[in-house]
Image (cartoon, rainbow, N blue to C red; front, side, top):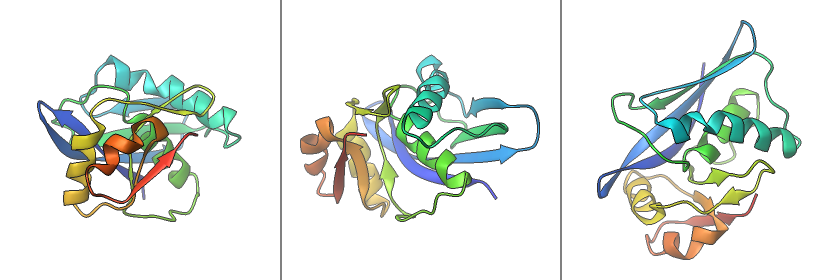
Amino acid sequence: MPASALTACLDGFTAISVEVQADIGLGLPSFAVVGLTDKAVQEARERVRSALRNSDFGFPQHRLTVNLAPAELHKEGTAFDLAIAVAILREGGLQATFPRAGFIGELGLDGSVRRTRGVLPMCLRLAADGVSPIFVPAANAEEAQASGAEIVAIKS
């Protein structure tokens, strides 16, 4: 059964909830991200792989597929990185301490969580959907707190 993490993306001036699903399967090592993504999301493969390795989590040496659902919605930007990493860790056996938590943020290659744009509308959407807490980059914490949601600011 694939593991998942929750996040959101911008669609014009509004935000839409996104479920990031990760599945580790049999086959040669590969890492595919699907779900109508742009180049920045596709590049998440390298950011997430390096961030997990440099944070001492390791990276699965199997066939890895990550799906960003709903698949018909165009997804762009780097805010999916943190949710992708969490979904992969959960699929690898990490217990979900907060199963209904949201994750927004770009990952640096060293595992740092970097500022991203559109955090306020994404937090508003996730909070409206009952997602709590929401993990955001420390650099976006003040903006995110304006949503009224339970916010956890993280640096790495």
